[in-house]
Image (cartoon, rainbow, N blue to C red; front, side, top):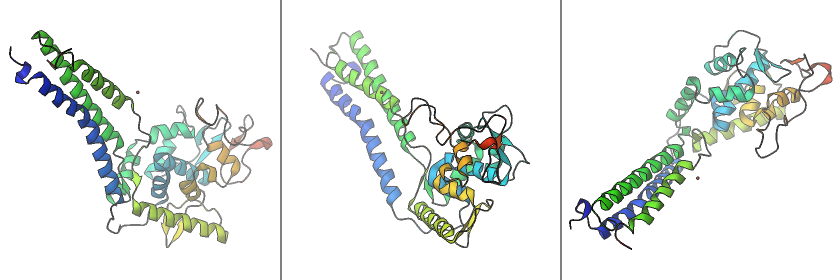
Length: 316
């Protein structure tokens, strides 16, 4: 009786066992290589000083960029926050591509909350252009985890399909396939697990140089606060060692909780997602504005009426 595919059962089982380990080894070695590459020293980064939106991306990724643009537009009076925490465009669309995308998301008919605008802009053209520029300048490295897990999944899927084909070929040739079944079950389980694993990190991550620039920006902002420099409207960048950004710079480096106006900060911070850690639907910073009132930029008291915004044989 001829062997299936010309490969004896025990030999195929040994090969298949190695194939079961191969995708995992590929994933581990790839991950190690990425981490070592991230830690490797890089040449000094040249180019213009980072803008406030580039600093926001380094500090918190795409969502922080959106938050910073919202803070800048609210601070300048281009956006206002309604009593239902919807952002409303009150001026002309800005020229900056990030700000323009945020402003377009605040038009009627959209979910114009902070969370809604974040969701729409994460993979938008301006956001991808910003990430690509930072990557080309050596300030961020692309997060390879999604790609690695996708490759591991397809490798395991290929191993599983190979085992299924071998199983049916062995059965049709009336060969013993009992020892192949446990390995096939293991391959199926590994395929399901590799498919079910979710990515915790999204988007590129700062390199050592990116973190150095971010640290310098934090130090500059701290010095400005210590000197009592007021929160002026966002200018969009870092110049001469001084951070020009006011409220936008504070949000870029610290998040919406650092917006200078506490009422507006509470109104802009998205409420916790129901069922997530930390509670179910509270607004995270106070009650909403009173009915009919709105929160506008330019003043420390922005809400009317005193309310606050708040996964027995061989192998064929």
